[in-house]
Image (cartoon, rainbow, N blue to C red; front, side, top):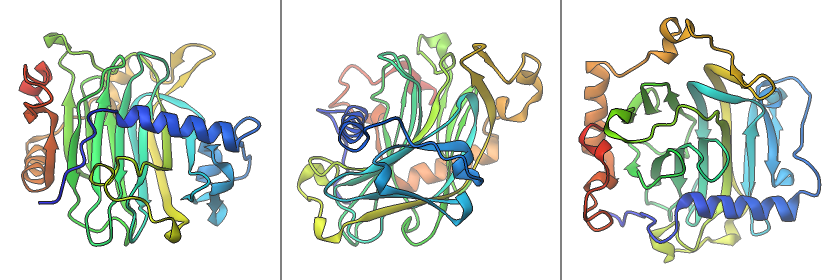
Length: 301
C-alpha cells in the first residue's frame, strides 16, 4: 500500500489558513471580489483570495481555481448556515498533482471554531489522491479519517456532500456515505451545533508535507494546476448575523427532512463497505498518536 500522508506535527487546518492568509496579503489589496451577475456561483459565492487565479464561467455555472508558483486561490459562500446539506460537484487537478491540496469545507471563525472538512491531497502521476476528512468542534480537531477513492477524481465531475444537523455529520461521495460523526455530547464530546458556518474552497501549495510527507515536491513546470466546480446546491438553515437567528424555526427541526436525516440500515452498510475497502487511516485506531485512546466518540463512531 502507498504511504498514507497523515499530518502530525502541523495540522492541515493551520497550514491551509497560513496559506490563505498569505494569499490575501499578497494578492488582494481590497475586499473580496463581489460579482452581481446571474448564475449559481455569482449569486452564492465570492472570490475570497487569489482572485486573479479564479474564474467564473458558463453564465455563472462553472467555477475554476488555479495554482501556480505565484499564488493559489479560493472562494467562500456569501451566507452562513446553521445546519443543512451541501452538495458540490468537483473535478480535481489531473496528472501529476503532487504538492497540491484542494479543499471544500464548512467553517466558523475564531479560536474555538467548528469545521467539517473535505481535503484532497495530490499525488504523483499514477498514484491515487488521498481524501482527507476531519471535524473540529470548539477548536479541537485531530479527528482524521482518510480514504483512497474508487474512481479517478480528475477524469470527470463527482459529487461531494456534507450533511450537518443536530444529530450527526455525514460525508458523502456520489451519494454514498463514507463517514459519520454522531452527536455524543452525552459522553462529554463537543459537537458543532451553535456556530454558523460558511462554505469555503481553495487550491493551494503544500509541497512541504502534502505528498509522501514532503518527499515529492510540486512540479511547477506543469502549472497552472486547475480544479473545477459545478452544480452547487444547498438545503439548510440560513443564518442572519443581523437578527442572530436562523431561517429555520423550532417547528422546522421536526418537519424539515434535512434536520432529521440519519443513516438507515442500508446506507450504514454501504458506508461500512467503503470503509472496509477504501479507508486507509482512522485516528481512532492510531495508538502512536493517541496512546491513551483517541476519544470517547470512537466507541460510537
